Length: 221
Image (cartoon, rainbow, N blue to C red):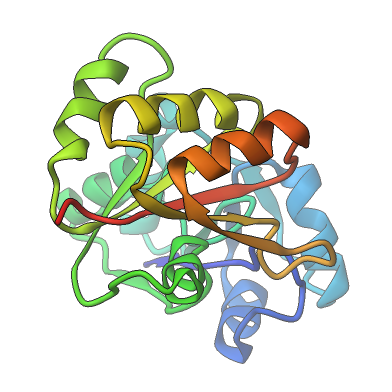
């Protein structure tokens, strides 16, 4: 059996009792970066063996791990933060497990874009999660597509590219498009900025934002 287990996006207390119990009871934990995950595992006294599983080795390991689970092992998949498969490795292993007849279950839990959507104050009844935009090739065409999307948009972006993204939003979406920048959600220095695209660009010209960032953009009227 494969358990897909969400882990906290910042605050270590944001994990369910069921998730902790599952991580204690499986045979192996598959972690994006084991050294990072051991901070959480140590905090909850979880001594289960950990194996590295990430985007650089998933094509090599997915089928092998699925076969092991088909033979009776129980494994849990975690990422550094949030729900595996959301902008992290996970899809391929789930697909291989399904093909091998392995039962797959995903526990409910933390995902960064959900609290960002709620605190943004933008419409939440319909939204489009876009993950990370292409860094170079295809980025402009993707932005042009999203500029006419009527649903609220949710993006992940690296902090060093945030100012560039705001310049692109001003260009393609217009300077008055409303948005929200959520930084370090659930952590000590959590911050939420709300305003228009041109105001965001001005703010980023005066101060640098660091840490994990979720950008929520108003859909086209």
